Image (cartoon, rainbow, N blue to C red):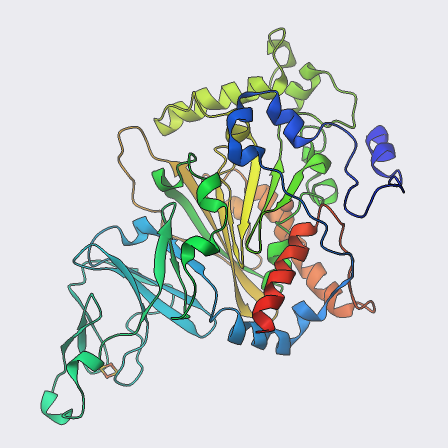
Length: 457
Ligand code: FES
Ligand SMILES: [Fe+2]
């Protein structure tokens, strides 16, 4: 381990421009180029840009005024992932999505179209359904207060005591529909009726994910966990692999964590790509030793096969069998690696098969948020789609290891256990802001740059 630290703590090359320095050792494109991943144009994309190195003020996280401004100018205007299509699989199924004071009821109509309506009765403002709730079998939406009802296309169906409302025109008393759209099996909404198209907002996502089949996956596990910190602070802990060194030391010898690739594809989409099962390029390891680090018997490694390829083939077979689907053509990076796309403002999509996570972070106050995790598993070759898992709710002190079948529980606990102290430290700091790495933390900087565009409008 000393040799690794000696390599990693050397000062950078002063002849390089800011942001040009990289960790010594093999790069992600070099790893992928040598294997089946090379033909995947999404994975091979490479797009870093230096975005400045000024400190980022802690007040962006801790200030109530900043939080209020986000509520007013960000959440009311930005495209947000609301639910999966399978959460509203059949006509009459609905799912309520909320953030701050904003609430929408996403519902599949009798005509099979998905629409999103403001979750507030045009009569006296009653919500049609509670925050976060879902249901099935609606033929129409009936308000639980006085019983006015609307068809699933939003048009007025009935006003009880119609004689008392001569001033109401039927066709002016429909539900307020907001923009919605789908991509990869996800339903998106926007509370701004004048927003731009979802397709433009998604930037490179549809292109990169074209062959990764996110629509052919189902929600195998779904968790909600309260976190003790500002939503941005908590989310940003998941936008870099730099913290692996101190937070997840069990991965130091098996993955090239400091050689992770960071990409900025646009205002809204960034990515990290961390190769797994490569060993650490700053350690002198044999392939057999790397295989041992992965929990296999080092003597099992056939001549001429890398630990990474051995592990990938093992997963193609075992996960393929477990999921009832043929994974033999899935490239090595997609089967093994931690590949995380962040879509502004609050969602992360991991297309990998070994690490099939989806994250969403929603603020509940300036110093608290909810982190949702979905495990999206490939559906079987029979095409049968199991019902989406019921969300399991965890409190601030609850461990992810209590979630049945969630193999990454201990790792997520390591991440979330940092938040109490980071939040307290952000508020206690005498320094005006945080100092980011030029390369490894560029996604955080890009996120704040885009956030500023909303706040300055
Ligand atoms: S508030 Fe909805 S019917 Fe009265
Ligand atoms: Fe982590």
